[in-house]
Image 1 (cartoon, rainbow, N blue to C red):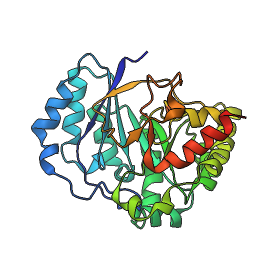
Image 2: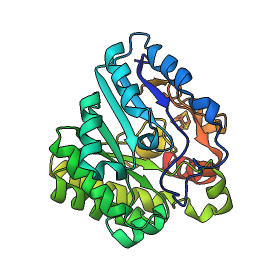
Image 3: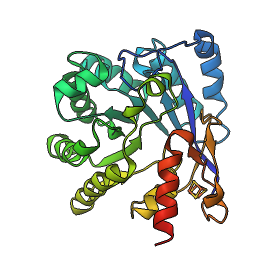
Image 4: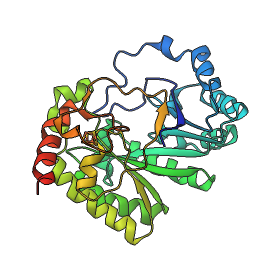
Length: 288
Ligand code: SF4
């Protein structure tokens, strides 16, 4: 059950967007992403068959195609990438990356409104690029999963966003990820952190739409919010898995509510930025 199933690597910390809640561009050390280092991480496969390439934004890494080819040669069967999708609006680039061996793109989407979306990414035109990118990838036969990052400015839009992506592109798999608050931009603007109780209600509506239309969704088990909060709200998290090479840090803690929890073996704990709300929910609803 706790077998490691996915290898995750970062190929850059830089990005072609400047999203209001991400500090990936801040203070990166290029030595961490030297070709030699990344290649040796890819080759340390240890029998794993799925690779997840992350950043920063992987498509701004000029060696990306070579890394994907190397991963394919090294024996990874599924090669996925977490991306904002903008560069895939160039058909030629999308096709090159497909030829290198990419099998799945996990594209982060924040909103269905282009003005709001561009304001969040701080790049004018990025929403239209993303949509074109999704279209190009689907036409090339690359599996597209949409990752919806939930924060205070979009949780009410989640059900409509899911409907929009399903009806426009036939997207069948969604990931719902709560904002990771442990970055300097969120620390400076804590009102970006969503209200958990209210967000859960909108998320439940989106999950209901998925169920009705036979779409799949998943909520990362060890994302920003621990599985107990979703369970209380009757939302399923994906089965526990361990990921090699993750950058989970030490800002997660267990509390007294965790003492007899059946999930503790897999759960990474509660992030301090969400702890007050999580503990309120756990203490009030578990005793009902
Ligand atoms: S260990 Fe704690 S935070 Fe994790 S699921 Fe259990 S109660 Fe929730």
